[in-house]
Length: 198
Ligand SMILES: CC(C)(COP(=O)(O)OP(=O)(O)OC[C@H]1O[C@@H](n2cnc3c(N)ncnc32)[C@H](O)[C@@H]1OP(=O)(O)O)[C@@H](O)C(=O)NCCC(=O)NCCS
Image 1: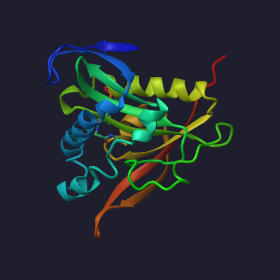
Image 2: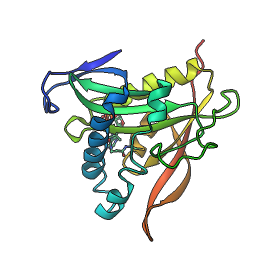
Image 3: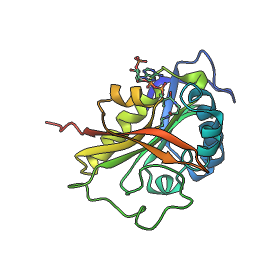
Image 4: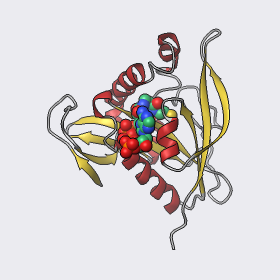
């Protein structure tokens, strides 16, 4: 699994254009939580207030370790640094951390009837627009297709919507995710039919 590729420093290189994709491991969780917080705080600033982002980091924007255990969450690495992450899921949950999921949320979907979930795409601000998220999406779509799914669904931030539109998803519903107190976050539910291989 590889794409345009990495360097070997501890911070994302502003010039490196290469990276490698691999399944996420449980020992990556700390680094992933840091990446997600940095990505959200910087890249979502044009769309949401600092209070909204602070309330969402760690709950809405977080690692779901169930996906790592399922082998359906992936990282893009500029070895040894993780610069992007994203995954898919065969479980009902649409977004958020593993903390607080109900057993129904973790229940397994029927590939013949239900859309696979696309989950938690985040790229380091120093590494955007290099095709990292698009490469992760291609990997997820192929894996979901291999598992028999015919459609995919996700809940996008307003910042993520252009990525998913470019990947062939269409908006089906605009709604708000309640955060703490009176805070809420506008998001978009999006869906895509998986291309059938001939
Ligand atoms: C959304 C995000 C994951 C995109 O990652 P990325 O690696 O920069 O995306 P890619 O380089 O693979 O982009 C692929 C295509 O998507 C579209 N796209 C991606 N980011 C875009 C943006 N900010 N504005 C407009 N189009 C965008 C473009 O068509 C792009 O192709 P191009 O660069 O050739 O024009 C990244 O900006 C991010 O982490 N945002 C903050 C977290 C977030 O909102 N994640 C979504 C959670 S649902």
